Amino acid sequence: MRADRNRSVRQKLAMPLNIVLAAVFFSALAAGGQTAAPVSLQEQLMAQYKLVKMGSDSSGVAVVDPGTLLVIQKGGVLSVPWKALALCPAKFQDNSLHPSAGMCAAMVKSVSKYFQKGDKVYPTKIEVNVEKAKVSFTVVACDSCNEVNPPTSMKGEVVFQFAKGYLEKAGVPEIEDTIGQVFSIVSDDQQGQGGQQQGRQDQPAAQEQPQAEPQTVQMGMTTDQAQAALGKPEKIFNLGAKQIYVYKDVKVTFVNGKVSDVQ
Image (cartoon, rainbow, N blue to C red; front, side):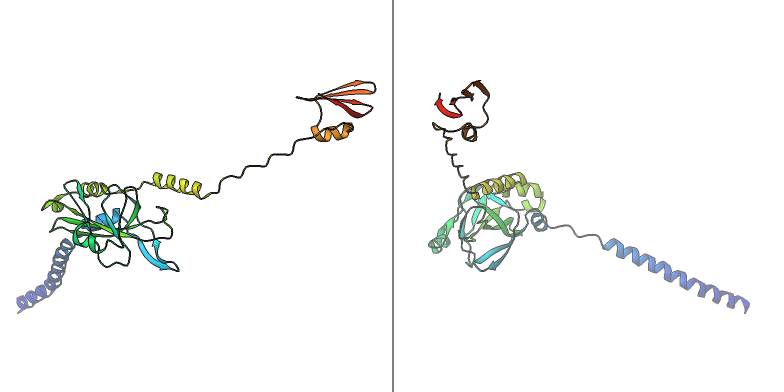
């Protein structure tokens, strides 16, 4: 009887320990399953290329928050007005840019124009399709940088086509190098220099200072009047009724206190 009672007590004491061990086991499993998800290629590119935020003001479409400033390295990217629904993307493949063309370009010919090499733009959208091995890059003109007034907010797109399976193993720096062949990031130094140049262009030309009226010394002037016009002389010769004031480039003679000769 006593043995049965002891066995029952041991079983009751063991139950909480089993529960604790089970909780620890499942907690460990849960912790092992909560590993951080890898950062996608698109997220990494968007961290490198800050997208512009567009809005509107009294004049129409406007930049609310500028993104990463880029400069176009190759001509051939067709741009259309901001409100246009369709884009005619250029294609970059095998280190060569194939300009926007074909039926799409023909349809928007009246309202479109090609970005020029050196034009500055902001990225507005980045899309990565790993399965199709392509990265779509949409940009909008930085009209203030390009000195376009009134602003037009023209936008364009380039599709970067890679070999099948390339995006699954390529590093972000390699992809950025490819994008940089068309859209290179403007460095902080270049932005500063551009701002300085822009500032110099905005400043009006310095006005020429009007030339001062020439000082005049006339016959009959007193010594005080002559000094008012020419200033204090370097030397003064007193010869009785005659005085000679010597300046750097002129000599004035006074007789009885009045100008009688100037040499």
